[in-house]
Structure formats: C-alpha cells, structure tokens
Length: 114
Length: 116
Image 1 (cartoon, rainbow over the protein chains, first blue to last red):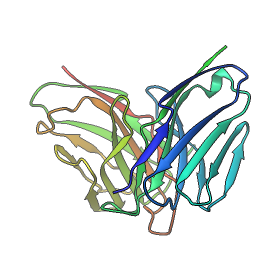
Image 2: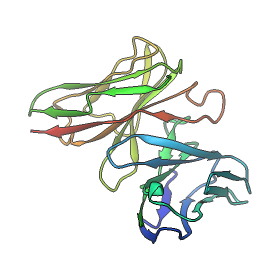
Image 3: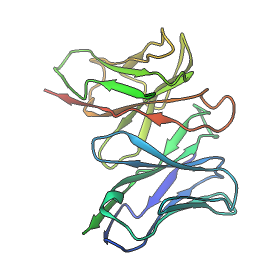
Image 4: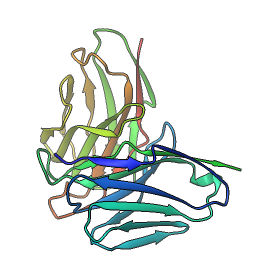
C-alpha cells in the first residue's frame, strides 16, 4: 500500500521567515494535493500537482512536485501569523483498495511567532 | 454560496447509543466521502459514495453505516459497535469520485464527536 510521510511534524518560525514542508511518498504520485486546516475546522484546498517538475504558486505559498514524482514540497515565503495551521498532503490512491480516493499524510503543524 | 455543511458542530454520545452526523452539499457533486481524524493522525477514509444509492467501505468502516438516498446528502451513523468513536469527522465531496481523472475533494467544517 502507499504511504505519505510529512516532515517536519511541527514547526515554529518567526514572522517574516521562510519555511519548507515536505511530503514523501512510498510509491509514484499521480496527483498530489495540499490542504490547510485550522484547529477544529475543515480542510481548505491549496493546490494540486500532477506532472513531474510541476510548480504552482498562490500568494506567498509555492508547491513543487519533484521530477521522479515521489516527493512534494510546500514553501512559504515571508511567513505571517495567518499562515499558522496544519498543512496536510494528500495523494490519489492508485494501489490497493478504494482506488479513486485520497490518502493523507499526518500533517505538519505550523506556528508563526509575531 | 455553494459549499458543504455538517451538523452538529459538536455531538455527544452515550454508551450503547447510535448517533447520526449530517452532511449536505449544494455543489452538485456526484461523489461524497466520510473521514475520521484523530489527534496527530492524518485522515482515514470511512465510507465513500460515487453515485446515489451506492456506497463503498473505506479503510475503517467497522462500526459505521451510511446511506445515499439523495445526491446532496450523505449521513453517517456511528453505531454502538464503534468502541472508540471520539474523533473529528470530516465530510468531503468531489465532482465524480475520480472516475473522470484526478479531481479535488472539498471539505465541510467537521463534527467533533465526544463520548459521555
């Protein structure tokens, strides 16, 4: 079966600093999704990547999928308190049961100190 | 505004009791999903439905049941057989459940279930 591992598990940064969150898959990724979650709330969709080497940006957040399609990174430039939350990566499930669905990493908790 | 609503926000269950979590969407999506989230864990799939009157078990279906009588509604019942129901439950929907290729799932605000 496929597993997604996120690193780091948690991160505390000073406001204005840059940071990177990684998502590594045990198998080739066919669709990689990044979501953000505030504690006790639902997931907000950020970006979806499909092709090896693909890179997408939204405001100060950039996500990349490596050429081999087994790792994705989420980079935040000049972090702000509004960036605080839990970031989860999800991937199209292609191996094992429930194909057509997503599997998720355990999330990275980001805190931004003002 | 289109979106997904879940109710209630908090739900308390007594031992031996069945409880039902509501999920409604007005996005005209065919597919709907239920996930369970535990502290420090990712989301785990409970049940999913790609079309009305049809649904499939996910990874952790034991102790749960669902129905899909209407396109916009996908209620989840947590039965007394679920021995560890305390968790955050998230409902999601997508256009066609991956049948047309990769597609994004959109999530509701969640229901937190607590055991008395």
